[in-house]
Structures are given as C-alpha cells and as structure tokens.
Amino acid sequence: MLLEHMTSPDVKEAAEKGLVAILPVGSVEVHGPHMPLETDSITAFEIAKRAAEKEEAVVLPPLCYAYVLENRHFPGTVSLTAKTLLALLEEVCDEVARNGFKKILIVNGHGGNNALLKVFLRDSQAKKKDYVVYAMIEPWAPLGELSNKLSEGRTYGHACEIETSIGLYLFGDHIKMDNIKRESKLGKTGLPKGIETAFDWQAYAVDLYVGDPRHATKEKGKMLVEKMVEYLADAIRIIRKETEVPRLLDEYYKKTFG
Image (cartoon, rainbow, N blue to C red):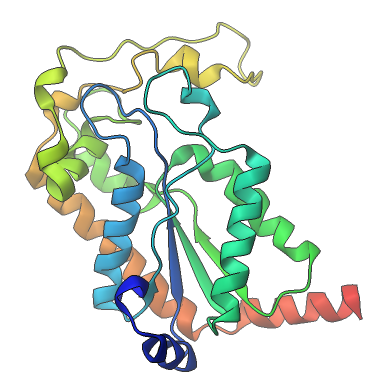
C-alpha cells in the first residue's frame, strides 16, 4: 500500500500490525541521451510498489534527490551534498518511526548512493533509536545471473541494455531509443589498479551510458522486474518476522549507552 493513498487511521492500523515501511531512494540525473532523469527513482518506487502487493508493506513516497556530484556537468542532474542527504535520510526515518513503524527498509535505485547508504546504516548506531533500518543498497544484486543470461552486449552498467530494458517495461513512453546511435565509448584514468580519484566515473562513462542499449527490449525488462520484485517481496517477509537484528541493536544500546 502507498502511504500517500492512506488515511491517518490506516497508517495507525498498519503500524500496529508491524508492517515494514519501505523508503525508495533514487536520483535526478542524466541517464544517457535516451532515459528520463528520474529513472532511478521511478524504478525503485515501482519495484517497491509491486513487491508490497505481494507481501504487505507500506511504501513511502520516493526520495528522488540524491548524491550525484559526479554527473553535475550534464544538464538536468540535481545533486545534494553527502551531509544533506545523510541528514534527510535520518529525519525521514525518524518521522516514519515516530508514526509507529519500527522496521524501515530503504530500497535504493541509484548506484551513486551505495557508499553513502552504507555510511548511513553504520552512522545510525551513533544515537539511540527505537527502530531498525535495513537497506537493499545494491539495486542490481538480485539480477546478476539473469542479467548475464539476457545481455547481448559486451558491457552493462549505467543506462545500459539491462537498465534500459527495465525502463522500457516500466515507463517505456518516456524512453527515446532513437537517441542511441552507437555503443558507448568507455575510458579510464590510466592510474594503477587500486588507486581511486573523484573522477573515475567521469573517465569511465564518458557518454553517461554503458554498453549498447539498442539491445534492450520490453520483454527482457519484464523478466528483470519480476526477478527484482520476487527478491524484494521475500526480503520484506523475512524482515517483518526476523528478531535477531533488533536484539543485537538492543544489546548494543544497553552496552553503549547504559
């Protein structure tokens, strides 16, 4: 169920039932010349919505703005600083918990959020909370084997054949396939392996898409979405029932804060 469609009594009842609250997190950023700026946000929200239809949960409105400094040199990208996004995540989760939801699952749709979300999870231990945060940080984690099977191109990643296929299935009317004229150019910094800089992504994905999205199809997208939804529905069911993480958190708080 979607929070924005619920009444106040509905929210109270859902919280008392112990439903998991899902926070989709995406971005507003360039996805090559063919995909809409809110690709990550729409995808995370649609996957969460479909999973909540299979395994009852409350889906919050998506948090669309993200940490996207690496793509600000392309028109349309809107980025928050790391400090702002971390504060926003904490305040949203605090408010969701104040409304009675003690298990919050972040569903991430933007790869650039990965490292920051890991920091957020660990940083949440700094203050005593009455709720637990879980996160599906790597959006493509459930798709590894299926992606390899379906991919016709040599490379995939951002706005690639796989992500474009998902987009064709979920929001095909907003994708402009005619804008893709060739396979992407890929580069590198030329530095030794293991040496990172702030510009590794810019050096690699010079076109802001990876591989050859022309291989994308709506049919592939349907299979990929169904796989993601199945994975997330299973995760929701397990999270709602599990007691080990709350126990560990309670033990941590007692030993740390007394």
